[in-house]
Length: 113
Length: 113
Image (cartoon, rainbow over the protein chains, first blue to last red):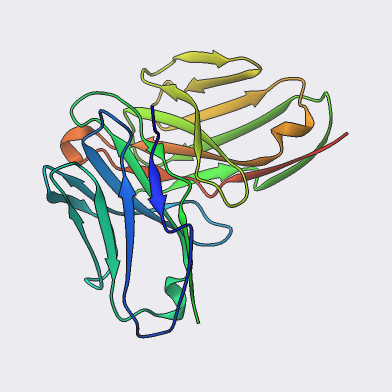
């Protein structure tokens, strides 16, 4: 049973560019949440997708957007990258409506130069 | 907004010693979770707590959900070198509020053989 998988594992982008990160949830899970983890900090909630819609959003600008596909996989898009967007981006999957816990992928390390 | 205060920030202990860390919040959570994160990896769920007062063990790990629902602690007994890593507490907001996780700042554990 595959867990949560994210791609790519590492990425280097130039300031001002756009990036797309991908996540496949754990088998049987229908909800995907994205988190940003800066160095030395705990993960910060970006947004959550369920039934292909954004259900909840954290305190992140509109440059951060996402999408969920019918197979429950998800993408995180960040436009007009800033140096401060450099972080580990984590995807977590869960089963909505039931007390299943969030399982995390290994993350995508984004470096903006 | 909701915040979690996790302490201590770091710990340096001798192999075989017991460890204790805790999280407090100004908000009530329905669920408390404890994760361990190794460098370059995503958080791995250690223990999940669902009821106020609940005490749960997972091997050498024991965690409790505080009676006030605003705090939790994690104990590790007889530490071993592979316990090294960063431990995060997380509170989950009620599902009707989206079910997102709020993370503490982490406790970095170092174990000296």
